Length: 112
Image (tube, rainbow, N blue to C red):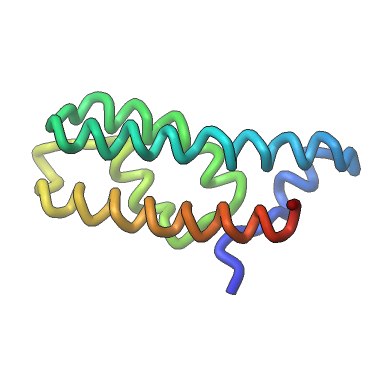
């Protein structure tokens, strides 16, 4: 099962395969670091950093149409501690982390 859809970024690349591969490379190389920053920030209860980093990676997640985590990334990017429990935040981070790991594996198989 494909977790992402490259249609939008293929459209953006306008047939330029090198550009497409560079977009995928950027996602594969930088998103794990961003997720690590989110997890470390959660451990420190640094909700502002969680919100900021989630907002930073949200566009990439939307561009790759990783729809299974769109609600979670949106919730974290708008993080309102009044509305989300600590458990909700932890569950969102876990789901995003697992999904992104799988997406990166898919992308590496498509573009080794």
